[in-house]
Image (cartoon, rainbow, N blue to C red):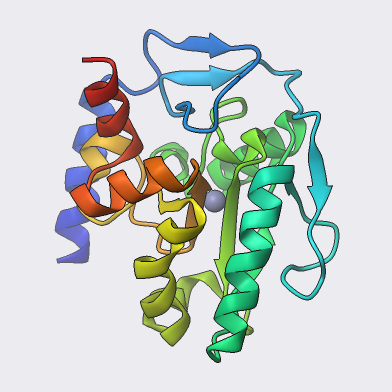
Length: 210
Ligand SMILES: [Zn+2]
């Protein structure tokens, strides 16, 4: 089954419109803007309101934009009070850092696998300062889906303004395999709409823009 899914994803990657007709964003002014395989951030873009997340809720030296940072700390704190350990493991990443990550993926796993699992530089949501990869206290993404932490966050993240950005079976829209650990801050209203309607940010933007 895994193999069939992998082949299907390869076909979509090869034949879809991903990484074609690319638009560049220079200065995002909202929290719900799209960054994906067709919309990239300017290479130099670094948000000017990055703030350090408390190590009560994150690994060391993890930054998010102010509003996302405050929302994430609240999420993680509330989760902790209920007995769930939700830690930010990867947050803001610069263009240069993403370039290294992606190139390493290509070297180790090949181009197609890299494109399913990692963004090319400029195309990563992590450069927005609004995306966070979380884990339970094991800090192991691969098993996050099976944790009680995931069971809680998937149905509660929206209350804090975060969405599960790369859901299962939305690969043809997002261009990424399922990532139970990757959340994107879009603000509470947009997150609630996306959660309640079970759509992706791509579908939301399409609805919004008619
Ligand atoms: Zn991520």
